[in-house]
Amino acid sequence: MIQFEIIKSPDRDIQKDFIFFHNEIFFGHSKGHVRINDAQISSTHIMIEIIENELILHPQLGVDHYLIDGKRATSVRKLRVGQSITIGETEFKIKDFKYTEFKSKKTILDEKLAHLIEQESSKLIIIEDLAGMMKQDV
Image (cartoon, rainbow, N blue to C red; front, top):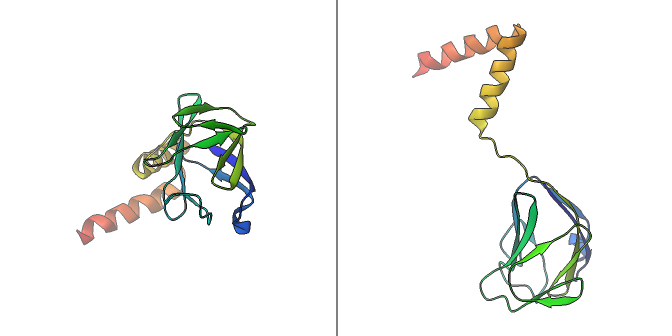
């Protein structure tokens, strides 16, 4: 989970709080998770990611620089909660981050099914019926 707030931007529609349940987020003008209408931002400008307990900012290919708390940076940097990042004319502030464990849909369904079996749920009968119908269709 990465939470941040865009506090200043020529793109007025983007000035708000964001929360993503991803471990990496791309920011750019025309590509990425966060698309910002800022003429000084490249199509894919930066990526921030969580590695273990650290938040890391990666400038993308062709990015000359960015600012952390008003200081120029040109390479990969660690970020902390409360820091401000400026790309182009857009500034955002890191509010929180925490590694989000990825689970496939199959893993989630398996866990839910195991829980139903443990609880001897009446829903289990319906699931078994559906599974049987699916096998007949194959």
